[in-house]
Image (tube, rainbow, N blue to C red; front, top):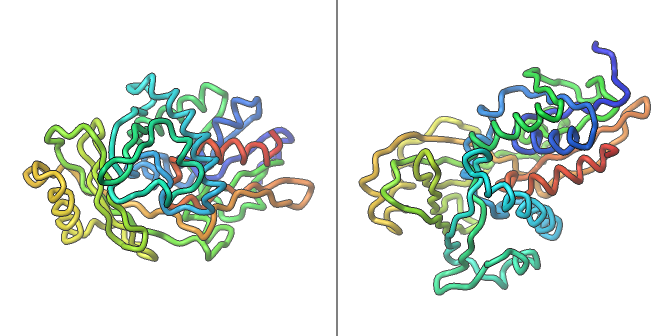
Length: 310
């Protein structure tokens, strides 16, 4: 067992929630280490579509505040897209109505009603670039990332531990309320599409969306509850391409570059709270972000840092 450090925080989990929380803690002056079971590029965050928008995450009043706080940060980061991976991109949420959203929506700059839904210019995040940038920013603040598995949160040798393990929290906490919502994507050579598009029925296990990224056009998607398979399903992939091509016919002939699958860490509500550990130590939980870990990352990270004593 390592010796406990009185001023150190250990963040468990190296995806978007863990790295963002670690950055906030380290830049506040704390000594911070990230312990992660796998490198950031192998986490669910790395295969996310990267569009800023609350999706499959509760409770909405809190989510709205976290999302807006994160939006401000991403808007600033969009000034340096090659470095941060963040760009501001126009697009349309077809079938979405302003009166069907919470108060937060009225505070999204430029969000407006159009004939077929809502249009906005919001952050689109190239996740591999952004995760690498976060890791570098964390290192510059004095933090370190270690690939190591945690089997007991209470045994982590730090005065403050922050649990950002996403779906891993199901077994680690344990919290059976954390469940996978499987998302499958197809990446195609972009035929010249510069705007994003979504058409999502929250009660359905399929949706239609495309998001332009530097490495291709991301097509989606699925939201299969309690599905654990990380293997791309060819039939599902064909359906995704067909649905997207029905909106933009030029997608039909686009060359397929890759197939991706990620498991969103869904929960009835985000768990962001402090728990006492023996010996006066603190455990902070920051998980259960569903399909919106990117969208709420900075708002949740700052609240988690506050709970950890910053």
